[in-house]
Amino acid sequence: MQYQAPKSIDDAISLITSASGNVRLLAGGTDLLVQMQTQATEPDLVVDIKKIEEMKEFKKEDGVYIIGAAVTGMEIIEHEDFGKDWPGIVDGVKLIGSIQIKGRASMGGNLCNASPAADSIPAMIASGASAIIAGPNGRREVLVEDFIKGPGKTSLKSNEILLSIKLPLKKPNSSGSYLRFTPRTEMDIAVVGVGVNITMSNSGICEDAKISIGAVAEKALVVEDAAAALIGNKITEEVIENYISRVRASSRPINDKRGTVDFRIQVIGVIAKRALNMALERII
Amino acid sequence: MTRQHIETKINGDDCDFLCESSETLLSVIRNQLQLTGTKEGCSTGDCGACSVMLDGRLVCSCLTLAVEAEGKTIDTIEGMSNGEENLHILQKKFLEHAALQCGICTPGFLIAARALLEKNSDPSETEVRYWLAGNLCRCTGYHKIVEAVLDAAKEMRG
Image 1 (cartoon, each protein chain N blue to C red):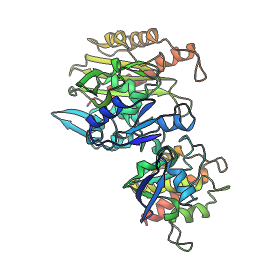
Image 2: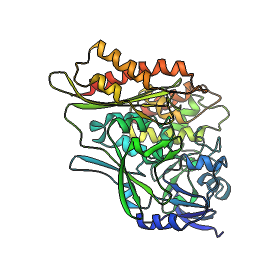
Image 3: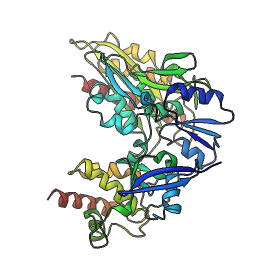
């Protein structure tokens, strides 16, 4: 196995474009090294992206956060202001493994690993986050929901690299949350997960909402139907019931060791309600 | 494949080594540098026995490539006490509270606990339990470990 740590994005792209065999990118390595240890993957070339400055940048420009693909979970959690604007994303990142794992693992890696149960992905989707991708012909930007194609599959071409994750301008009177169900409180994989972002008017009417559900389909889904049940309404019990039933109707989980179809559809409604209330309570 | 020459600082001392690109930091620390206080448990980042500090961050050395340590500082359990007579308060409290049985998980717990107390000198029991969730112990049932960490924090606050 060869190891390269290029200093620029252009060098990284030419490396992966010209290389043959199994090429893997390395950020925190908490998925890649596990796969290597278990021989699930045997790379010929590992390209470490952490020496590329842009990959480690975490900045706010004109109110818009850009998080480099190699910024670690702990850096996101410990950021002084980010959690005030995007508490839902911090909820999701906090659940990615132990402190040790988050000391290395990046949100960009969680996105590229594309697990249907990834905790940061529904949170990113609900927040309107997009992926900035660098390739030989420049850069492109896609919404996170369009970046993920299926389990372990993204829209990245073989000569492209995820550069950063971009959050939109945060709307006034808005907030977010991510909540999951797991049998244990820590060190577990989501049985279901719900990301919520909601904007309220001063008179208590929901002006905008985006809902994303995880671990109940081949990838995290946007539930426009459930958001539509909220938008234009006061958040009454009746509205919440309607929202919950729409979340359940959009879920299409599988039976596996973490939960049955029936259980997941039942529990995602409960989690969706709690996540909604959590987001509402956070609006100042 | 030529071996890579890596320069680091381990427990305050300059330290360079040669390694294969695919070798983990854990493997180099234990097998080459003979710093066997850091333990290998699961090799997949679940148990925390291999915890070390890498540039001040708590990480699993089993999920870090040794080549990634180039130019970085590494702190292992061997650097925690100042000789056998001058154990770190956490080490003293682990002994006092009998917070270990077989001892395999202990270096990882100590490294992780020190990282917590450096950030938060007055953690709640819940905070200690969440912070140490990435360290597994199959002997103690955790209670004594948590007690030892809380007691150490109290003593360190003075």
